Amino acid sequence: MLKIGKIEIDRYPLLLAPMEDLTDPSFRYVCKLYGADIMYTEFISSDGLIRKGQKSVRKLDISNQERPIGVQLYGHIIESMVRATRITETAEPDFIDINYGCPVKKISRRGAGAGMLKDIPFMIRMTEEIVKSTHLPVTVKTRLGWDDTNKNIMEVALRLQDTGVQAIAIHGRTGTQMYKGKADWTLIGEVKNNPLIRIPVIGNGDVDSPEKARDMFNQYGVDGVMIARAAIGKPWIFRNIKHFLLTGEKKNEPGIPERVDLAKLHLKKSIEYKGESRGILEMRRHFSHYFKGLPDFKDIRLKLLTSKNLNEITGILDLILEKYKRLEVIQ
Picture (cartoon, rainbow, N blue to C red):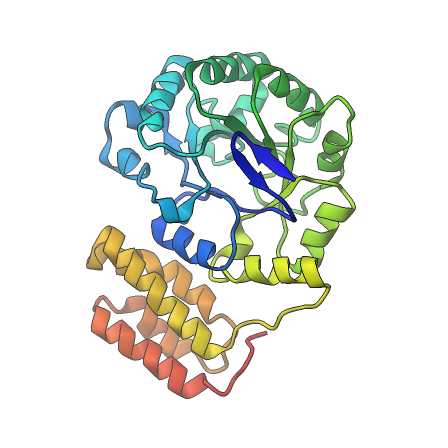
């Protein structure tokens, strides 16, 4: 069982990872529809939040339909993170998550995100102050270490546990590794199976199939599995993984009618949240993935990714349905 504060997820908890410019309310809506147990907002800059930046404040928009959900914060100044934590409380999330894992240079080179792994004592002081400042549960998402010579996740996990955080999610790569190479789950398993670790350990990195989720649970013993890039354009991955874990049977990939209906629903939610122009623009990254693998799709894809008109896009989606409806599964 995965327990964070009042959250209790019994069998095979699956979490949608926080992803910048991706895990907005529209994407979270469809992932929840397909069985994501716990979700996170996009990560929010503490500096942007305390300065009341529109983009940062808007990311605090959450709905009851999404619960349980955590708000993820990042920053490199303790006072700013504490102030942002108190602002975040007004959105009434189920927990607050601290981003100690983002490897993007514009964040990590300032000492935020995965950059915090270069100064563990400072990371611990920041975490202690955040935990003390809020009545909400606090969790952390981090990586194995800053680089290959400093894979110190065991020390980090033990020290973070002492600060009072209620769970830790570990991405199986280092900060300098970014998203390259293969995620190493071995150290995630060692952290989870250390008898001194009492908080839940959530595994993250390269989980893109039911079989990999099974291995993460069974071989490494994690309390939950976090899914990131594999959910882009495939929110049904949560449903398929859960079905496999509970029954041992693999569920077919959705056919074209389901994908078209889902794309329309996702587009509708995106426009409701961001307006037609921006909602359409930000759906383009998802459209490419929803229909990835269709034969002779290049011209239709180009139209789908360049259209700025809702009626036109709806027509293109109807065309996809008509042309490919007999194709049951996209490999």
